[in-house]
Image (cartoon, rainbow, N blue to C red):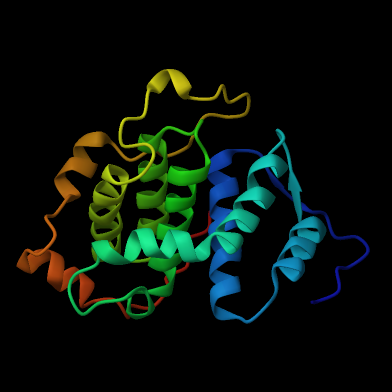
Length: 202
């Protein structure tokens, strides 16, 4: 763990969209860099300022994804095409899918539409066009077998912070959906080794 300079100002995380991005980045690190959950939590405490009570989302999400990884993976794995496993898909996609699955199973107050929109945006930012379509298509199938398959919008929690940012238009999501087992779907799965792309900074 690197030392934090005395004059270092923690980066503020003000929206749940930003919080999801942080959870995704830390989940990716947990999956690839061999660091512990305790180290990740310490890094968040040192480097980020969670506003609007986002500490009630970020830390529970990371702990929940870690503690329930086997359950989440068992839900995702059957939806992959034949001869493919979670270990063979892009690590960025794997972290995104686990985060979305965590919200489907363990965050009853979050709209599944928001979960899918935000996951697609993460895939667009950190993956490729194929990644975006693959994540969206798989989450469409995952939602059908999740506790939110018959989700009632009246269950949505009231979010006091900034609204979810940069939601993907529904028409674009509908256009991106592909059917499992089709040549297009199999082609996307075969592209599972693409390089992580860092989003453009303003």
